[in-house]
Image 1 (cartoon, rainbow, N blue to C red):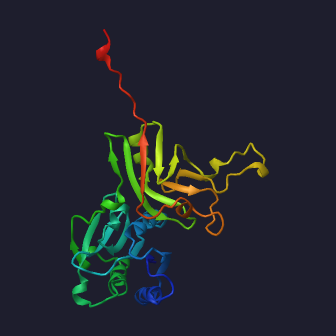
Image 2: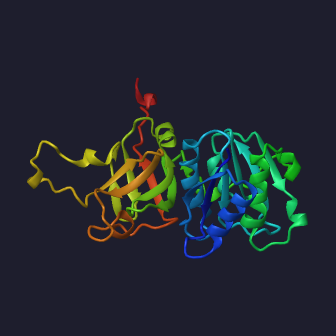
Image 3: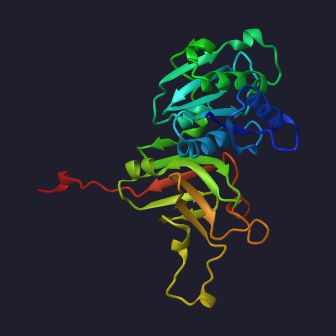
Length: 287
């Protein structure tokens, strides 16, 4: 039985999601469809990549992932189908796959060419569904497109490292439902560059010198509940996906507020980590 996921920026007000699901069931009556999300910020490929990267591994092997974000076909935005990590992705070649495949090499990439027989302004419905159905029936990727060697990279989602100054320069790639701000700086990079040194994280006017492993590490449980006053406190944490996150403890967008609003942080804002420089002794002055 085919398992197909949908990740789009369609929202749920309009007919788009229902039409795509109906088309899948018309092709594959026994299919199982899972909505990852339809609330991607319109055309935000970085947000799409972050959500999909941290979701797809929870699904069984051979799951087919349809991605409908910034999906209009153009000379600069081809459509591709990828076999990656024993999963299939059908998506535009707009850079979003670069983050998902940052540490895993795709098994096969094809540029979809069945558009030659289909005229459409809704490619997710008319093209991506056809490709997903073909794969679900056991069809080869080479039938629906020509094999290519690479896909578009996305510089935007890659942090920069200035090793001469011991600085990582990253940015905000996502704001979650709690208003927490997720950056593109991952724990592996932090450990590799930091080498256990002290550091300073700068996020606009906010400074952090500690990164927590859990949100509630900020709580002093030796103090009685009525004397604790940590709700609304800001903190830095490596989240479950391994990315540096700036958060507000027990944030509530209706009352306390989230890091995005309270700290004035939004998509693409710069986050820097500066590590303490270790001075090298100058042995030339020793007689």
